[in-house]
Image (tube, rainbow, N blue to C red; front, side, top):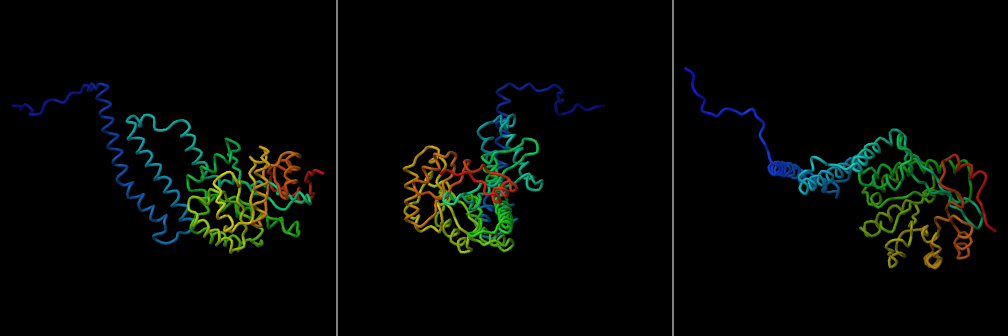
Length: 358
């Protein structure tokens, strides 16, 4: 004789859930997901923070790069947990189209180095007294295989946020130094040609930057003083003592330092005389805006401190004449040349093909 089951029969009919029940269950699920994300993430971020502060000793170049990437990805997970907390339906619309495109660019940028999609272009810095090219500023460019030329305004912040700024920075410095060596051998002059390379705040505060730069200078036979690293005023704000200490160490190698876009940010005028710098660069906004009073003030300040001045963004004969009348002797901008590849730059050096104004 069969026994009647003590358990009620299982219904094969789908359970009806009201909108309110769906929202409640989704909220419970997302709360659980958020909790499960945050619990290990808190420990991971704590350890990464200790590594970043150097509590376990200095890291190799590759180790520092991997640490930066790990910190970036941990922060992404933290933002995802925040999004889940604030938006129960986040699982339905986690990323906007813009965020998806950004993630794709981020992934593509990782391979830009190995696929040789990055290159440097060079803009001449000119003496308006002799109409001679004194050197170049090296600027990075990314040629995406499908999207074409990606603006530095997009990929530089991307590099900073993904931890790839260190790799990009060292690559730029080494490539620029190699090109400078070739030019100094091909076009010997007195004084020798120089090369300026931008250094971001994140790069400047990297613990092993001094050793990395020393290695590059040991490998490439250029006089250290012909390499000029450009930093912005903001690099001196976040951690001024540490920044100045690192600048002093780099200065001891013989490298020169320029403050780029001077006057556009926080100017630490009180300590400017104590900074180990060699030149100020007048921002292009003062030139294009014809703010000659500000330009004159910068020139007077630099003269008092024994610093050189370079005016950026010079595009017209009138701007050149006005700046020259104020005593500015070095300039760069589209009036002389746009940033060009190394072959075109070599032609400019060889032919001394710089426009001039009487």
